[in-house]
Length: 283
Image (cartoon, rainbow, N blue to C red; front, side, top):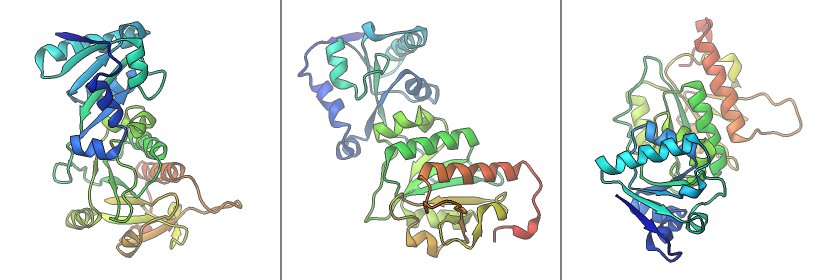
């Protein structure tokens, strides 16, 4: 059954706005998904929303209408609450103007280190203390395109960084948040898990021992990328099996985090498709 909402003071709409704040997201363990592409990815991954909000007047194409019908079916078979809302109400609830007329409130992702299914030679991506949601979203798109085994977001207590459930991350990822395994984990727990699974820690830093292109990246590795402002945290530098660098030929001494991540990840993918001498193996 669909419920019509019309009041700009509706408590559910006000709560959607609260979920833009991490404190409220963490307290409720819920976040917001906007955009037909992003919503499609969420539904295809098996996520059952807590709530779905539809503005029929804003459904602009067949894809949006198909998603609406899918949500109507979910409302009949699950506990998902389905609401139709007015254009004015949708404009208040939606963070961006072009959201396609559909908005979801979904539960937090429940992936854990223990539940990860790894390939024989996993390629993991660790983002430690990244500050910008746009960068993290772009990194998730890279991870999807490259087929990495998992993305793990972590930080030290003094720097929480951007959380994976930030609605801006979901928007910037174009739904890639839902297409690869992704989770958050404390640095200490993550390092213990990596050691237990014999996965080498490879950090990227301007003071690296050698260029990433001169290292065999085919084995069981976790690439650690640090924050835009401060680089890789000393914890990961101290516990790295090897520290690599990207050669910079210009005046500027650093790349955007998402750009740096992309070049190294795709080098690892390239190597895994070719034969590389074992003399440069990460140990």
